[in-house]
Length: 218
Image (tube, rainbow, N blue to C red):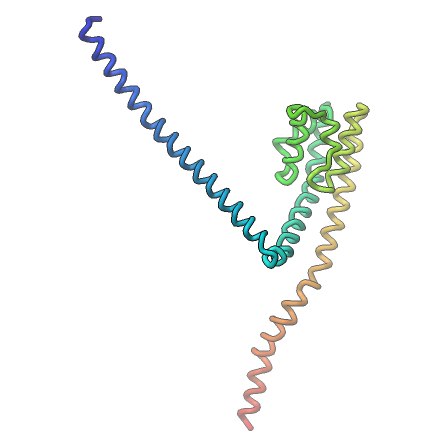
């Protein structure tokens, strides 16, 4: 290669490098701007939440909504626990240990309980044992029995499949009882719209024209 071709090759290489680098830098700048915007939005949402919580009236008014949200979440977790237990029993039947069973079902666990499964599966990464992670307080009270069963099986080495089957049966019975209790409460909840909306509307649409017609006839 001659000396005159060397600067030309360098220029061509620099040009191609610039063409390749420009889209990458543009995308990086957009990603950084998006990250900053998301961070600012989270900070603003946190400030709004703190400002709302700082007002006693709004905090008191928001209690029913928080209770309803917590009740909905509790019902969802109670419905998903039998599914999680069935998945763990299936993994245990294939020969997995309690820790291996939890790690095997993390990907398939229902969203409401997947976080708890991830905490158990990654306990060793945080310097904790699987038994201590199972015995720590779970995010939902219905997971306490399952955590105790997993800890007992991991500690003693006893098979956990039979214990999981019993837990699944008891969880389904509890879920069915909760569903029946919610179904029995539906007529009571319907009393308010029936008395204060449906009956007045029925009276206005049926009785009021008759009464007005009778008065007009006199």
